[in-house]
Length: 254
Image (cartoon, helix red, strand yellow):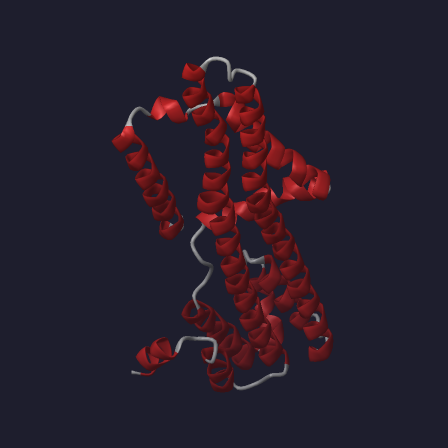
């Protein structure tokens, strides 16, 4: 689990809740009609804007906000050094048994293409297409979540207008204006909270996760191409170490 995401949710919602409780009961902020307008309207607007299959598919992408980052560059370097040394000692075909043990579908595919004897240029084109497809899927997910962050406050305003119209119908009773105004504003509150504490931060985390995953894929592709060209393991290590932060490189060198 990604601790930062969990902490962010707990801290942000915890402080909002604390502010509410400081001023009175939390029940005055509970309004089922307001929640239905904001959540239902946001989901409905999203479905109008995007195909159903695309919206349903984004749920799998959203899970990435709660997952820790993928493999570290150091772990990938160690893995490819093992592959490169094996291929240098026993030949490229010696990687065939290893492929079955690799859980990463992208890495498994790249190694299989190498073992099958494809030219490095052909392997690079195939793997780059995979990366482009991955980026496209992630961009769609980020776009949808950002759209939901835009729709939620707008639906909150619509709910507030509905509440104000209903309030104006009861202007003959001054004592009812205050409570009615409070209920009308709750919808705006729901929209602002969902947009600024859920959807927009989630889209930002998804964008960062996408960059991390693409970097891992590019690093794996570099290693696969180097092995397919029969490069020296030491050269492969130097190439892959360029993906590491400078501090980690110094630590490894020492």
